[in-house]
Length: 162
Image (cartoon, rainbow, N blue to C red):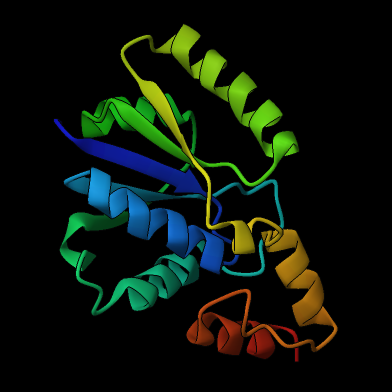
């Protein structure tokens, strides 16, 4: 598929950093498939279906909403990309430690699927410190989530951490 990208992640939870990457990527690509990774070996706060719904709600009404598809997947990302006939993987990189991990993954994916490229995007510098791990910690302690996640995600997190 020309000018399309997969944007994979656990999105547990969706953060403002994810939204920033998605919004800017929508300017670059005609179609973005947000791929919610479901890993049964990891304990997630939200189920795969809940994460898909939270993303759908977050993009609702955005000018670029029609460019976005959201799907769950399990397994090798390159197999999913091939299934969707997409040659670009979109990855967010917040800091050097992210880049080191993502660089290794990009090289591994290139070795396994040379026809698939990885594009790295950095979120707005004000969002670079936000991670799902930090968001979950703040939520667990009842902290203010308003600068970390969309309002409906904050509400869902408060429900989970009651």
